[in-house]
Length: 352
Picture 1 (cartoon, rainbow, N blue to C red):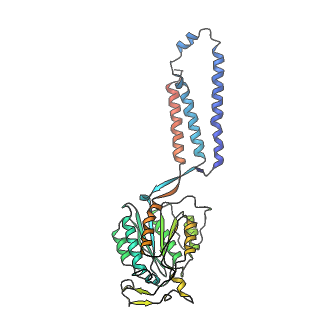
Picture 2 (cartoon, rainbow, N blue to C red):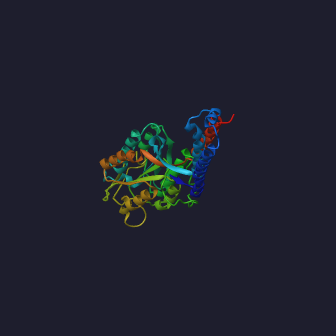
């Protein structure tokens, strides 16, 4: 349990002080009781009460003060949120390098199959959305519990030039903001106005980002990380493909009906020399993105490894840590205990 205003807990000293005062008054009353000559007469005029009934109002009042004192500190607790409360945004790389054939028949076809199986394996209550990115990022399917449109979109994606990993992260954050009022939209992508010092607590929603290359367009992934950290959104990254990419071979469907395209390992990778480097997943950056946002990084070099990664993900995201303020609960408990103390005092008061 953590507190927003820990100094307010100083008010808790009131309870033991009142308890000490109550104990002192009881001892003082016992000393005065010996002044009566007839103890039997005194007992006959007092209402019959059990010992616990005499002390119950005070105990309830003290418990009320403790609850209200803790509530004054604005306590927060960390709790597990089940996966059914989670929105999973899939960010899928559809750059031309995804047609590399080092993973048969090519990277994109294998990624589509594994992503489709991951979607079908999730509980019906889980909202899922799809962001596709190449030279720019696009929200193809907003978070929804409907699977038909999502799977159809995954099966029909087409490739483009460039890889905008950072933009895909921001687009995923905006998609989560549509369904979770606790998450603000990124807007124009300007720097966060209230960066958080740590990622000790998270919202239930996550981003799962799959790419086979490095960022070549738009905002850099590490520059997009503060936006995810500020919004307490975890990013799970998957680096796909081997370190020795082969020729590219896109099918007509993957090209969106364009002329069949092929090329060597460095074809279409980006501007400048050493294009082959753009066809290999930027593992160090993906690892840092996952670490700084509270997610995890996974590497997959073939179809079996990618299916295994997607099969393991539900175990990691089955529950999410969420920070919840319980001030209202303790305040309500304190008020209820105070009312019970008054009721008990009126019910068992020795005076008519």
